[in-house]
Length: 132
Image (tube, rainbow, N blue to C red; front, side, top):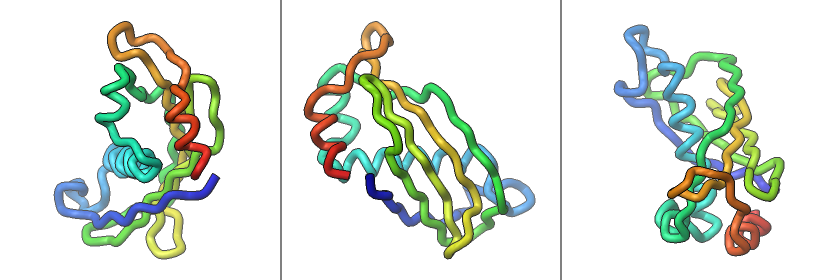
């Protein structure tokens, strides 16, 4: 599958008192990239909610390699590297120019939003993801 890329600029609200990106904000940047990858496949959050589904994060593994700082221009990537019946594993990186500042994997599970139990990915999602 191809790698989706989302440009992000670091604003003051993203940084800590030392002027570097606060660690949890890297996860927020990654969330945005995953959301935009799904939107690029033809469905956004409302399409999933209309089907009474949600994607919930099951596990995250992140490596912080270099600090991103105020006003940096970053590229946040998202790539689906594994697809199960009810889950997706994303490989993600945050880049400043050619330098990786953060990388990780995020596993999301498709759940029924009323009972919060895993549910198979619907055919329209599987079909859309086969295009990336």
